[in-house]
Length: 163
Image (cartoon, rainbow, N blue to C red; front, side, top):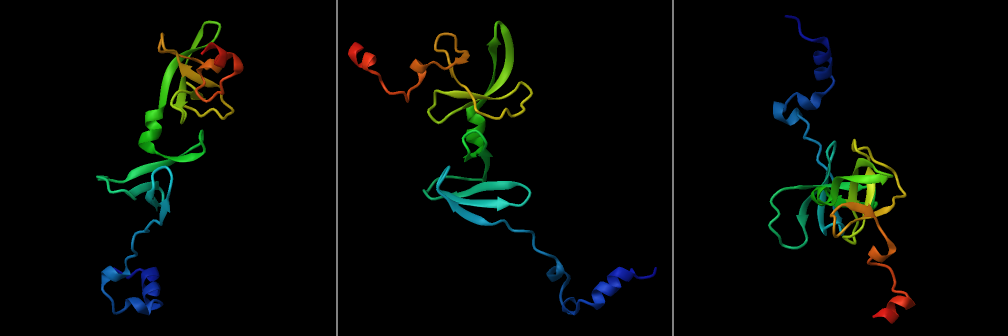
């Protein structure tokens, strides 16, 4: 069998490979870059090309056994751990308008009470601005948030007089 012309020419013009073992010619896999972030958890994060960012070590001594994937949240415009993102996301059937029920996706905000409807029933992202929703205490179903439900609102003069 005749030698491959391309392999022969490549070998001829790369003399650094003439006296070296075959293993030294192999390229090392692309190593990701390491960065230290303060958010979402202070620690060292690694970027793996084609896969994204991962938390590999925390600043505080903990029993972290494996890499934790990190993704960018378009809703809060911050980086969050994938496990935290999945914990905050949920789908529910809601009453949209005059008796029409639809399955929609909600994301819980940092206050722990308010949710925003940011996915349709098929899981496609709905760009903001979003209305805030909350879970009704009696029915345990989603409803639009009222001013009285907001934990961050300032108490007015009437509220102070009642208490």
